[in-house]
Length: 151
Image (cartoon, rainbow, N blue to C red; front, side, top):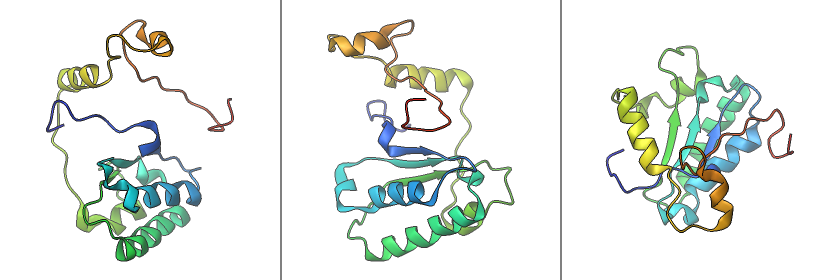
């Protein structure tokens, strides 16, 4: 949010957590964030991490700190977003030392920021033309009960 030109995270950099999120999904994003390839300035995110069940939360903590100790990446970018009101979450307890409060932005500020970052650039390929209606946004949300299965 500090720079107007920095891109938002892409689909492979974000994991939206639910109670059904599996250990391997969490492990994959942690590996991506702490691998030597992550020095390309990607920002890896867990959204709604407070929804993870205890077993997956514990795996996240263990895997993260184990990889952090063996990682050669001095400046990784890994953000865990949690609901501040979810006091019974293991993730919040495990990563409490790294807690940062995000300033509140108005709905208008958020909409303006997203509309500038999610616009389809002019002169794009025909595939991107499908995203131009009605607000010229290049991001669409698709919700599925079985991600990656086309359902």
